[in-house]
Image 1 (spheres, rainbow, N blue to C red):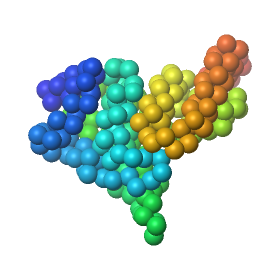
Image 2: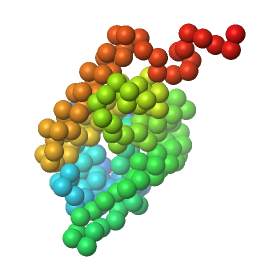
Image 3: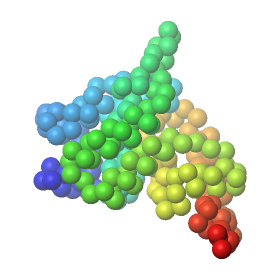
Length: 205
């Protein structure tokens, strides 16, 4: 529990980049060995110019100091090392890493004795952090149902931080897509459109 408290203090501070020191001093090898593996995993891919761990640190710098958001960014790519494949031309892929990241996140957070509510929110955001969709009302409503209306605003911030911590490759296109999704989301809220069964005006009676 003490390690968890100190880790949360660090990642929600004004200097989450100090995770680099946690790695350099060997502390991560003891309290968070998964992070060491991330720091040592190269991402030979047009979308990335940093190792998985360096990208993770940068993504925490691009998101506000909220416990759930910062922990999501810390754990969002934990599954990448296990899912890395390399093409003959040297291009790396990490297909299905979000599912592995979710399982690792649950395992790590159980180990560090996190409360169930934080574990639930963070692991779900980790699972959907790479969920992409066209910026249409239909697709955004479906995503709100899938991710939950409660966590969808968090998901948007996670996607933005993840994008800004990547290379410049197709960045304008990605940001344009996120702006479109945000516009649809705001319109859904304003019109009070239904995104789940419990919001329907009819029930079993």
